[in-house]
Length: 165
Image 1: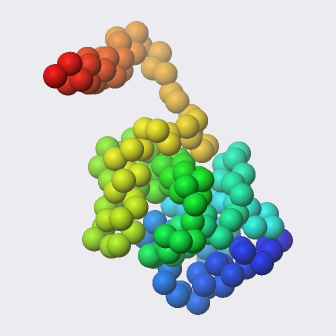
Image 2: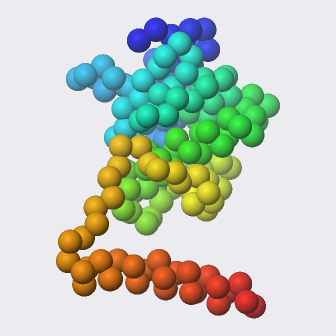
């Protein structure tokens, strides 16, 4: 792993445990020495972060959002926030037990949850992409498949009914 100036600065903060996010941030697995965001391994190439098959530009703002417990608003841009939201949603970092199927957030009383992550959780559908290393399993049983379609159809109908008001 070759890191440059930006990544080095934030990884040094992480190693020194200075203002680092221990709940939603990265961690280094002591066994395999790889960095992770929740259960998803990440790679660092120069300053960039590789999460799954996607590479994110490692700007100071993105690193600030990932590492810091209370990121400085003047450090990150809208693009940094959007990239951070995509990473955090795709890695299931906001879900209880980091389980992609979980519908309950892993909330906390911290500044980051109250000021940033709660908003990402609320708007998570706009950040959900193809996922990172996930596979959709389609049931082979036709009845189970129909049951699976009932949920999104009911949700859509409820949303349309709500929007009529």
